[in-house]
Length: 589
Image (cartoon, rainbow, N blue to C red):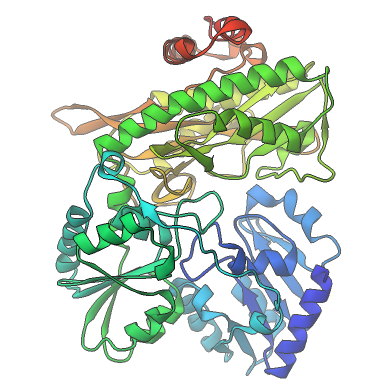
């Protein structure tokens, strides 16, 4: 079926059930960014593959709302679907609930699938729709439309041992219970998959590129239950759960079990799915607050920090070998974007404890680099020659940590305009790398530092500057961020984030420079405790696209110091022509 045919089939179901509008969020029961195959409902329906965005279908219109990362990609993937693109965050774009109200009449019924809708979204819908005399209904209409939905994974769940986790399950649960007590909660639902995995020191592979597994945790002051497909836990995982007093229950019994709770005060995150709230709302008090373990997980302990440092050497070696191969092969052999991504995977796979990619590699040649979350397909992938630039954004999952790196570099002749833009983006990355800041600072206060060199030229980019990164967990991890949005979460020592300013010229080129950075304590003064960033990523930048006179002496010194560190860490693991080429690449600017 084409996207247009799927929408038509959905509308047939809507008419049968007297539904005037149906919303398909990009979500699963655990509200993850990356979804198991069986929960990729929005992608299946619309054809749009981006990680963010949702679709609204009325009986005669359809729209997709997504953010600036996908303004170039979305129109291509929506072509012929009959679904219009609404550019979220752009002036003149209607807020989706307002649009639904404008496209329906009083008494209309709007439906969602409650188990794939966050409580926060449900409450926003309920509030606005009721004021305009529209009804909200929980109805999983796609069950009868997507009939060949993939079966749930049966992949093994395994232990993340103490030598990599750095903190025991018992200590984590004790810390969470302390936070529960402070909130007056007697029970706590943990539904986000990375929080479940972190809390119990378990990992899996139910979601592509993310070492997590489908499960819920219900924690009380005396008990801890893990709701999971019991056949998926290996013997070591089962033994660990028994040892730490975690009782195993079937995954699909979770909502029924919740429904039996009585007179509890239950701590639930606002982004938990609405079905969880419906299951407990009648006989219990609900405390809607962020998951305590979410922030604990973001602050990496010493073991996890050292794990990042360890895998950055392996990842850096793989990147240098890849960069040497590509720059010396292009123009000599037939290459395309998809094949280049596969080759990069091969280099990473040579590294110790490599499990797989941390996301689908972005290999964007020339104008495709301007598609911020571009994904080259096996069929129809762009041919790559020794001319112009290429953007490669990729990462790896290793047992000790997770990597995410972007390098933009020339494969031949590039314009002076490109070199200037590449240098401006690099200036922003360096300025963020250099910052010292007091305790209590939020990411939004840094975002302008990375953008300022571009802003001074009247230029900008449509994505955040930094996201959190998990420790052998999700490559996108909250709750902290560095972006324009007002995120209230303070940046703290131990957090790992990306530092990735960019610039994009549609149809010509895309530029992004990305390193991962760790927050360390710098010093304590009479004013406050101050922090600084340690750059974790180890991979050179291409000096041939840097306009030196656009850099300050401080920025030149940072780059030369960084390249010296990269040389010290990676040189012992390189040999032959790669080593000779690398030595020139990391020489002073």
